[in-house]
Length: 441
Image (cartoon, rainbow, N blue to C red; front, side, top):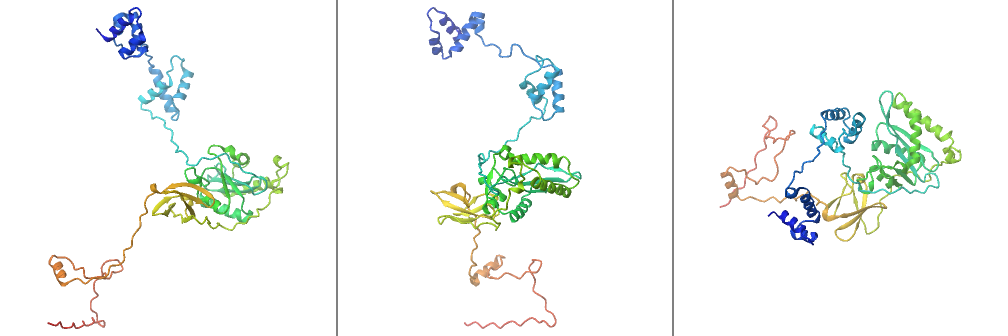
């Protein structure tokens, strides 16, 4: 007798405990009641294994399949969800397959599957910027306006710098690209003209910040800190953190970008005129209808170059090489390419942990045991010349080897090849050989 039949017969006895019988046969109560229901409906035949094929298979018509392929080729970046909405506009809902079915159709047709690029998680988590602004130059906001092209096709990348207290536009420089060197040159002129602010607020884009670097600094923002300026970053994907600056870019969009100029030079001239009107003529409601030039004043902090790197007495100071690493405890500790050319402080913690500092900025802890070893090129001192015995020289000649008694290398020619001895010429006779002393017995 089959075990299923035995279970059903025992369960059909009066006073039988189905839960106890399920535990004895090693099955769940759900499975036990399933066999009982099948037995009541089909008898012993219902206890056999049945086909797991769907009872009512829904087959997609060939017309739907062809339409899915046509829509996908017309919209290469659209997925099954959007394609299903298009099908619902043409066919009845009962005829349109589900999203998963459309995905399987695309896979069988060999259509490429859309894959979203995976973003690496940021190493630095930004908080909501909290800056106290009570006077001019307490905070400068910096950003790039979205680029546009002039009439002759030249690319314009306007760099805008603005004082948060007075709304005074300090700079609107049209650049060809947001390259670091070009941006630094602009800020050097700004600092010489207006002095240094207490803080600068930027986003996390290049060349201002990088969420994959220590403290999120680049070479430009590290240079600002070396000048004594506090750098404040907004949150990635939150332009509202610098909303007033984005409002400025909105005005530029309608008044400068839409009626673009002929060349980049003429576009710069148009931007200069717009800045003069914005600072000197246009009244601002946030300033009680005053102009920004009525409130702004030059910063009392002059531009004097980088500060000297001073760290507490217990810290070790190491320069950051061009590749972004320092040499410490016979290890190569990677700090970041943004700190190349600067010096960092190393605070010893419990072995093997150390903490890195960049001026007053904490760069985090480093485990020295996980840092690669430093490879040094040892320069061996020149070995003293040794006199080779005659017997050793004779043995070398016997085996066809050159004697190693010569300590100085042969002269080389200009091309680097071994030079041959110069032939005898008239007026340049070969010096006579020195007479050798006679050997004694």
